[in-house]
Amino acid sequence: MSIGREEEVEIHNPPRFMPGERVCATRHIKNDGTYPGKEIGERLVRKGDAGFVRDVGTFLQQFYIYAVEWIDRGIVVGMRTRELRSLGGTSTPKTTECARGVNEGKAR
Image (tube, rainbow, N blue to C red):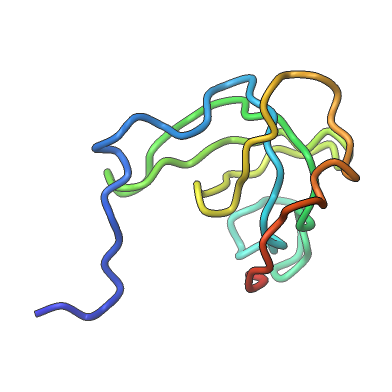
């Protein structure tokens, strides 16, 4: 019986983003209690922020989690594929470049 929350198993395919790749956040990301030193609900990343993928891991043997370094904020946050968009290249990030073409999404 399906409960409607099932998602594709991402790890059956290669990761969409690779270490060193420049990415942009497509959603606001708040601390869900797993980020140390920040209050629960505190915004960690804003939609449109630019960063670089530092590492790729997995979660629940189903999803890729990308450790993204947000240069302007000085933090590294684990992000899901749907929360990122590739900017290509490895040059210095500029937030204004990210804002173009970012889809509206629900804040977490």
